[in-house]
Image 1 (cartoon, rainbow, N blue to C red):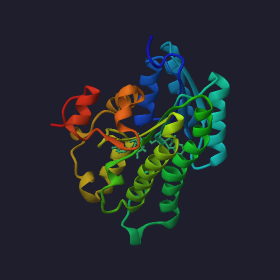
Image 2 (cartoon, rainbow, N blue to C red):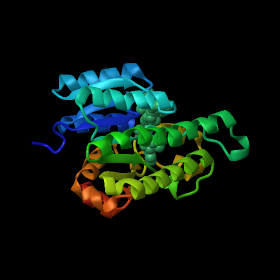
Image 3 (cartoon, rainbow, N blue to C red):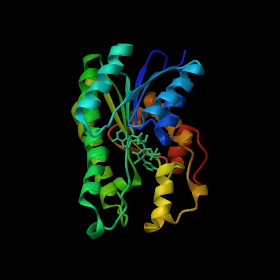
Length: 256
Ligand code: NAP
């Protein structure tokens, strides 16, 4: 029996890219998966495809920048499946890309609302559910931008740095109560986000050849790996898929 059998996993930003791949992979491993995003048609289609393939999946419309939506999402998962074992805080934005003095204050703050407040809301709602039932795993999707500086990405770098800080602080507060908090920095991944980055033409990431991006399925595989006992070595930190050590630990090919 898979370690995910009868486990409930909530994934935000599951309508495409990394979140979609994670939903499909964890459902194939036996988890009850709750897919959350704003694009209801997409998450409903993906959930139906998972169910057709023999998995267990539910779609739930959720804008992570709204506390009430996230609260309802976690409540729905517990209602449906009786518990919450894993939360993947994956929903994230990178647009609008612009140098700071050219940035649109509304767009810049929307990135804060999704990338930081959305993660905070997930933690705020999931941690009490998990601690009440003996614990759980929370994966915050991070980025090299959490510790690096890139032109045109002040909103993205600042928000991913904040997410890393949330990973560290909540690990300190709740590890003793069974919460396994882990950040995951995936490197560059072949998703719509990288298409937008390329189009911007700003900074060296936009100049990368798309062939260097890893498939989202590798990130999904890493999320499953971190949910297992091996993930304990990375509690309170960002696990990186940009290093050969990280790739080897998960059983993925080396960087070059
Ligand atoms: P993507 O293809 O653009 O997907 C982003 C996902 O986030 C979508 O499912 C989107 O769904 C969801 N989302 C955005 N705003 C939301 C909101 N307000 N409420 C709920 N969901 C929302 O991007 P991706 O590459 O898969 O990125 C996933 C995560 O990985 C992000 O946190 C990103 O920062 C991180 N990351 C990506 C890369 C990369 O190279 N791709 C590298 C490092 C880190 P809806 O639009 O349907 O709501």
